[in-house]
Amino acid sequence: MVSPTLSFAKDGAPALRERTVVETSCKTHLSRLRRRRGAPISSGPVAACGFRGWIGRYIVVMPASTLYARVEDTIAAEIARGEYRPGDQLPTEDTLLERFQVSRITVRRAIQNLVHRGLLEIRRGLGTFVLSPRIEAELTKLTGFVEDMNVAGRKATARVLGQGIVAASARVAERLQVAKGTKVMRIKRVRLADNMPVSLDETYLPLALGRQIVQNDLRLHPIFTLLEERYGVPLIEADYELEAVIASKAVADALQVKAGSPIFQIERISMTTGNQPVDYEVLSYRGDLVRFATKLLRHPGDRMGAQALRLRRR
Image (cartoon, rainbow, N blue to C red; front, side, top):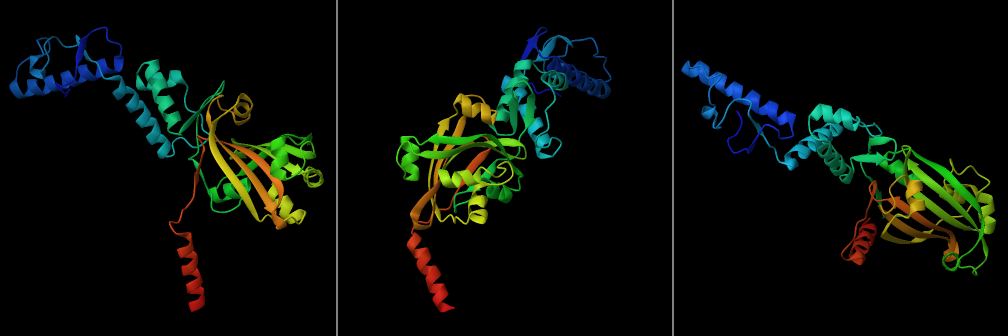
């Protein structure tokens, strides 16, 4: 039965789906009335249904929010059930129009909402794809991209965009504690998780160390691992600065997002023994795929004191 609180409009309103719903509901209700009262109502007024007029002349006008929410919720539920897996392509817009029997603008709004929720991604010229759940990186210790992806259960790979010797800008020189114009090694990579671009990394290394690093296949070997395990350079600590920025065209192209998309930009200076900087990075993480988490103590000293007390008691 159709609720009498719904609004109605005469034939010509846009949604075929809604017309079918009302006619079916009215006929079902009238059939019940016919069986109950023994009266033929097939061609008469449908006042018994709560409507003034004739069968088929009135259709439900459902609010736009109801329509796109129905499409959005249905697709979201299918993703949650695993009917669409991360990386799967969503059916075409025309297919969704046929399936849900709604307008094109309704389908587009539902898709945009799912994009904002981080469930879908629109790839220009390719289609709409299901995203993996957001990757959570904990800011509790110094780790590299591969280590973070291993913890998240993702397969990390890299694509090298370029590597070569450059003169240190004022900012790079300050971070690496060298004179401006000093020759350093610059390496640019796109870091991927399950073949999805997640981060654009721009790394600067002291020249002697950088010459050694670029002799390796950086698609396969993380720089942190090379520093520590192959070249005996321990990483002790890092200065870490994070801010929200919008993606430039170069960053957007590398990460396969629109220019102006929100990203996390991180500057990290990793130090070895003697507080000597050996690795300066500018990392651009996609804001729609990654979130950062940490734990803060109200009184850090109290916890350290408590740990020391427990150790003494042992």
